[in-house]
Amino acid sequence: MTSYTVYMDQLPGLLELWAKEFQVHVPVEVEEGIYDFVPWRKDEEIAWEYDVAYNTLKRFFLPPRETLLRFDPAACTAEVVCEAPKQLLFGVHPYDVKAANQLDTLMRKDVPDNNFIARKKNTVIFALEPAAVARNAFWASVDAHKVDNGYDLYWTRISSASFHVEVATRRGKELLLAGGPLDLATDADKEATRRAHQRIVKESLRNGLKYPWRETADILSRAWDSTLWQHRARHCFSCGTCNLVCPTCYCFDMKEELDNSLTKGERYREWDGCMMDSFSRVAGDHNFRPHTRERFRHRYYRKGKYIFDKIGQLGCVGCGRCVSGCTSGIADPKAVFNELWEADRHDS
Amino acid sequence: MTPDTLFQYVPTPATLVKKEKLSDFVTLFTFQPDSGRALMHKPGQFIMLSMYGVGEAPFSVSSPPNASGSTFELAVRRIGNVTNAMHAMKVGQKVGIRGPYGTSFPVQDFVGKDTIFVAGGLGYIPLRSLLHYQLRHRDEFGRIIVMIGCRNPSERIFIDQIKELEARDDVEVYETVDCGDESWCGNVGLITSLLPHVEIDPDITHVAMVGPPVMYKFVIKQCQARGISRENIYVSLERHMKCGIGKCGHCQINGLNACVEGPVFKYHDIQTHPEAI
Ligand SMILES: Cc1cc2nc3c(=O)[nH]c(=O)nc-3n(C[C@H](O)[C@H](O)[C@H](O)COP(=O)(O)OP(=O)(O)OC[C@H]3O[C@@H](n4cnc5c(N)ncnc54)[C@H](O)[C@@H]3O)c2cc1C
Ligand code: SF4
Ligand code: SF4
Ligand code: FES
Image (cartoon, rainbow over the protein chains, first blue to last red):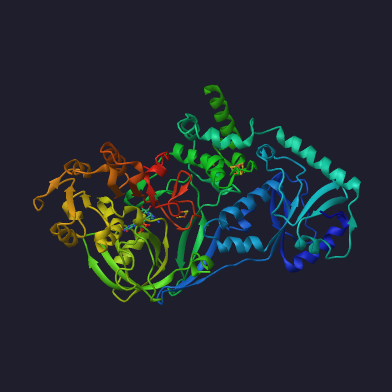
């Protein structure tokens, strides 16, 4: 794979070129110690050392609210709405790339979701090797410290003034070379990249699952009746924060709205969460997961087993957002899974 | 590519051609797709129906496949926004439909076999599609045993059609209500009170069952006690559904999506799923 060395002072020019074609989003420090992706503006200070983006990047492929069709209620006609702005996400950590790839796989499964696919296709992703590990993150222990597809370029900061950039797609290469030729990476740069990766992976591994992640589904297959669910979920507010901040949660509701004249309307989807009480209620007021313990358990089964049974991946990339977001301090996949693993070991 | 794969969430228009009241809360709607093409559904499948400006909801197709031309029937209970709006419709008005979706009762597996239909309350609606299919091809099937249970006589639906079934000598009909009233002189008791009255040959008996969530466990237990294999027991399970195509997550039964891997399941395939029954 070709790789180049890019110097910090070459970046402003490149960003300006990219911004002509794409809505470019970059990580910045929005409040002290809190980072998020925002639209890039000239002189924006990019937070190269950010630990985790506060909001998940799934919003770029699955917006919190997305119009799917416009209709005319009187004529009873509807037309498809499929908006897919050309966007470029610069600085995406590998665990978030992995989460986006997982959504892509699931959205293509069975009947493809073309709205999602169109947005994903029109999104250029420049991955960035993390330079810091968020306090609650554990991505290396769930195999989300590396990805082999789903990005166009992979950037690693190798000195205060330079990056090593590995090309993954033709689109990525064209964008990288849009401002003219660049230096090919030297062996020393490649070595520095490898060391940067090793260092951060080691740091991420300090916190995490105590067993190989692949065993999670198996452990869960014996954990249905564990007391852990009740124990933790006792404190759950059913607020759904853990769903909303999670890069691999993609459940949605469908709603619609008429304009004031009542002659036109739109149907849209909106993020929903399985932790909310109304999520699986049906006509006749029957609720299939009426208690917090059942919803809590469902979420962890989905992360650890259901997704794995479908596509062979863990449904959690270890970003730690839910851990930070849960006011009750109970949403923590690594703690839940480790506890179940301990109990399982003890039993057998 | 079919329109479905291109525009997975866009309904196509259908016109209401007939409306018939079945009970205080349930109405039978006959729709004609404006395309003129039949739905091509299989018994047990459902569609998503749009009342634009109100919402979209899943309904089982109650008519058998391609019954009469390209129309199809839905029997709908008035319970909330979409279903109330449907009940307010006049013949000639239009709705949007997409589908059919989901799994169906595997009709071929029932050929040459005896079938017990177990319909609790509105469960008769989806079962009716399979039942009428079998009646249309009566020679291909063995005994047809229909068990119907309702909470009370006022909730009975398809009363005339059931009377016609009772009059036939090639269909066995058993009906019960949980609580009777002065108008009712039939059986009183839960639906589980019916099976003990029937002689069956478990080796050639298939069961198709749809009803309220509480019903399944008890009836399945009873069927198994009578020697019917879990391979031959089919259930249709209703869950909250928003997308119908395996994306929105609402219909999950453990790791299964009821809209794609269901709503019709072989009991054998879901018995280890604690959220199913
Ligand atoms: C596969 C399937 C087949 C069905 N077939 C029939 C049928 O043949 N006849 C019939 O009368 N009903 C059927 N239903 C139930 C029907 O979908 C609900 O009654 C309908 O969605 C209620 O919509 P509403 O807007 O009128 O009610 P709402 O105003 O939305 O709410 C009323 C109640 O319905 C529940 N509900 C809302 N949306 C759904 C949904 N998408 N799925 C399930 N429950 C929901 C709500 O939680 C609430 O308790 C079926 C449901 C499924 C999943
Ligand atoms: S964030 Fe915490 S309190 Fe809120 S739903 Fe999730 S587990 Fe429950
Ligand atoms: S479950 Fe929590 S840690 Fe895992 S991907 Fe979702 S938000 Fe991140
Ligand atoms: S109805 Fe959306 S996943 Fe089944």
